[in-house]
Each structure stands twice: as structure tokens, then as C-alpha cells.
Image 1 (tube, rainbow, N blue to C red):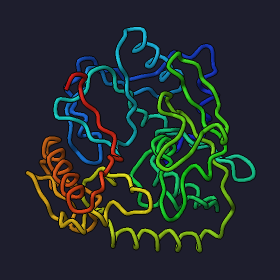
Image 2 (image 1 turned 45 degrees about the vertical axis):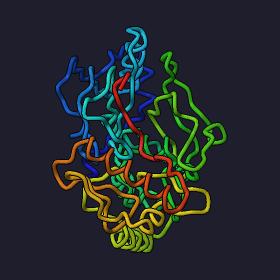
Image 3 (image 1 turned 120 degrees about the horizontal axis):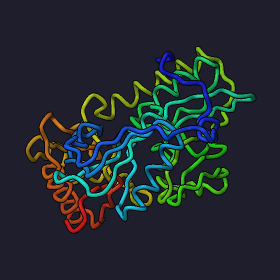
Length: 312
């Protein structure tokens, strides 16, 4: 909704010397992280914090490092599988970084916590396009940039002009497009926290663009279980092959353990029918990988990110 958009630039907020870092902190939290993910499974973290500014992110990162604790970044929680035992250390939830600022010549500055669907709607109403790659992709902007989300309609990195990150020492720096090292489902940001992304988008006819977006949504809805809880695609596509097709051809569609099932609609999705555990999901993934290896001689590599406690 447009009413949720804060048009103040995040970097401008973080640069004010008088600002007290804004964050919501939960120590020894009992909040199950699964409730914050699209798949809906997973235990709790030792500490969960929700910074509302770049300064708050810096404070969270440097505090975790100073305490000698591991830290992880959470966006919308897609492309993520969290173990039932949860994770040790700190989890930094970025969804309060929700600003969008429109500049000249199609420049759009977006907080890492903005949902991709919100960005699509806001840019379309401004007559800006070029984000077809994000249609039907349940993520925050930070997660989409980090994973270079996309598919047949392009990739997120193609529209990025620069990215603002917080490094583990608390330094805030702007990374140019060429420095982002965008590749298939990857970028240069494995060890940094994306707090802001700057897109350069083309001007389009709003109605024609809306029709194109709706067509993509219809196409995806027919081929993917978009109405079910899932983490998105679970496996990377092997070179020249489709992971979903390999799973399908191996007879794995509909394989189920507990409430976790290989979607009958698309073999690269594992869906949660309501009360699946992470253990259920891991059993499904293990069985699928073993059978694809047996039938096709192909070892599937996980695309979904797995969080576990150390030593487990």
C-alpha cells in the first residue's frame, strides 16, 4: 500500500550525528523464526532484533561482532529453511527498512526491507517498469538483490545502479553495479548487510506494463504453487538442465513426509500443508536428491539457504 511508503532517504537518516540507533531487541527470544518465513518452519534465535534505520543495523552488527556471536540477516524469509532447533547468535530482521524514494531519470532508492510486490506497485504507478523479474517473487528487495532473483523475465541485478551495505565492522559503503558481481543466484554480498538498493528503471506505459505483469502472474500461477507456503525453488538448476524437470521425471512429485510435500504442480517446490516441521522438509529433500541421483546420475545442489545451530 502506498500509505506504507516512507519517502525519506535511508542514508540521509543514518548520517545524522544526533540520531540514536532505532531497533527493537529480543534477547533469548522464544519467537519462532518459522513464523517470519514463507515456508513456515524453524525454531528460535538467541537474539532477534529489528532495526529501523541504517544506524540501527550498524549497531546490531557491531554489537554481535563485539559479543563474539554469529549473526544472520532476515528479510521476508523466502529461500530460507531454518532447522527446528533454531539458530545460535543474532538474527537481524530488516523489514523495518521500508523507504522508497523516487529521483530523476528513473532512479529509485529502496530500503532493503521493502517487499518486492510493494516496489512493483509503487514503480508502476509512477510509470516505471523493468522489474518483471520480481513478479510473483515473495521477497524483500534486500533478499532479491543478494540472490540476484529472477528467471526467464530477467534478473534483479540488471536494473541495479548501486547498493548500500553495512560491513561487519560497521562501515557503510556504496557498491557500484560492476562491483556487485551479479551471477546466477549470487552476488558479492554474502558477508555484508544490504540496507538500500538503487534501481535505474525505464519509463513505460502504465497500462501496457500492468497487462504484462498480470500475464506473468497468470503464467506463474499455472506452473507454481503460489498459494501454498513454500521457500521457493529448493534446488539450483544444473548447467543446461531444469531441477524441477529432473524431480518430475524421477517420479518424485507428491512425495510427502508429514505436512511437507513435493508440489504436484512443480517439482522444485516443497510446500507446507500447515504443520510441517523442518525435519519433514529435510527428509523430503534427502529422498528427492537420492532418487534424482539414482535415476539421472545428477547431484542436485540446494538453492535454499539452510540455517542451523552450530554443531548440528
